[in-house]
Image (tube, rainbow, N blue to C red):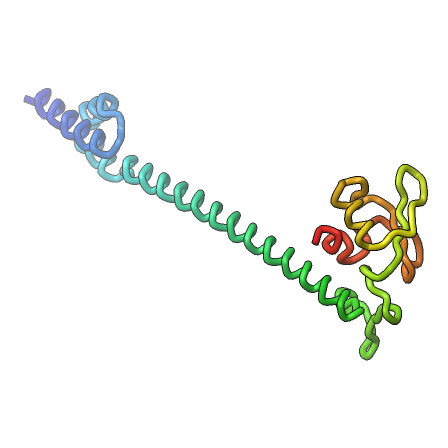
Length: 178
């Protein structure tokens, strides 16, 4: 009779373990050898099926959130680039450099030379170590669009203290792309 009770404990323990995502054969032997303690142990341990489902939901949610953040970042970067481009055009049309306002003392406003704008200046650029120019802004723009010059190309125009790469002149690369 005692053997039959141990088999019943083993079977009940195995059935409960199986319903909770655990190995039924292993838990049968635990229930068989430990009886009531095996049954209590399988009831105390967590349900692996529920835990796996919860982990899967969390992974899916994290993946969805990462994708949302990536898309939002792309939109923000695009808006920032468009705003920077618009501000550069605005600054050139007013002859101001508002990008440097934080660096200035109160009352000091950086104003370009009288009547000088990027588009009205004569430009010089370095090509294969040779100085080219003076050329109009439109000619410089066409040279840029044909990819004969790039952001590393040294340029100079009236108002610039020295030859500098295109990337160091605020708004120039954006204006050349326009």
